[in-house]
Image (cartoon, rainbow, N blue to C red; front, side, top):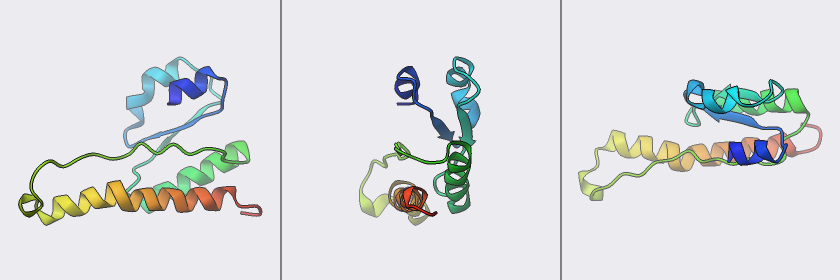
Amino acid sequence: MVEVALARGDIVVATARKPEALADIVSKHSADKILVELDVTKHEQVVSAFAQAKNAFGRVDIVYNNAGYAIYGEVESVPEDVARKHLDTNFWSAVDVQFERSRAILPGR
């Protein structure tokens, strides 16, 4: 998605838990695009990412959140800590990102 948006000439704030994973994309595009470290399971990083985007560009138009992963197996066989991490990433982080997106686009925020 990042490469598609950049190819269209859009401004992109790309986020990743490990920003070095996006080094190839970053090396191909101009410095007016910013890269933000973001682990969506860490609320303070979600808030910071939106603040950085809004400060740099004045607004946030579109959010594309592709964080998530699958667990394969019977519910009874998944350890509780693994299930909680899964829900934190796939559900609660999506809620958190959407909430902050809403705050970022509301007038006067």
